[in-house]
Image 1 (cartoon, one colour):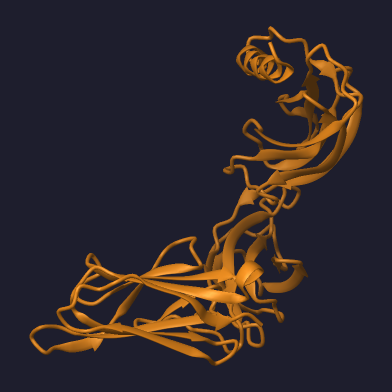
Image 2 (cartoon, rainbow, N blue to C red):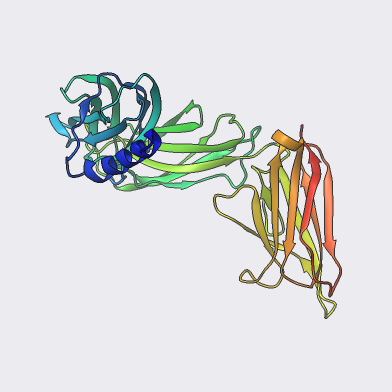
Length: 352
């Protein structure tokens, strides 16, 4: 039997037997942890929290990660130990291999936590401190259009105590934190408060917005509400009822149509959630898609953005794709009554 076949069979047996403790987990003495984090990074007690662990282990070994229950150290103070061990075949391991693993923690109460990664002997070699927040009750109204040179403001509405609240903003990479303070956090929540919070200049892209409200009572962690803020380029595409925007607003897509009765109109966009490169357009109803448009970033190997257009109708259409970064436009169409072909324009837009 070859070494490769032997190792494959050993790995299959390891995976099958790990849950039933048929494998001995060796202490992680030769392992290193290069990254320790949790997801989401700012959790509330309602969130499912995962430990994200990365590092290196001896070659041919399998990491075994086992979180323990939280141990209460004091009022709203906890410690969680995560065991990192390895299951290894009876072979020498001259090389190390990278690993990344996720493991879900048990339900967490609001409070302050210390997360430790320990070996089989209980010795810690990585540590992380984090808070689990109360769930906030604020309504967040985001700006209709937020651009890098004019991000706008966020309107907050929540049930508050007496006094006039204030807010401060902190920016940490792609995270925008809004900290709301109240002059009297001990007073009962009897009034509906509203506050407009101006945002700082932000980079183009998606940002996590975290709004922290005063804790109830004051000694507990703050209440947290999260949202996502999408910041466009200053000259970028702005989505509306007749405009589809792709790749963070870099490309503007619009279309017109004419049917067999001579009627004309503008196409309506149907963005695809989580897909910045593709979208749909409809003519007569949102449940009847007429066009599919994809703009593909092929700059690495062709120095061009590629455009693909497909149609599921013989209605005449004229579609325009504009690159807002360069001002270049490309137009595609199909005559009335003709069976449309797939458009594959691999030289649509030059890369900057």
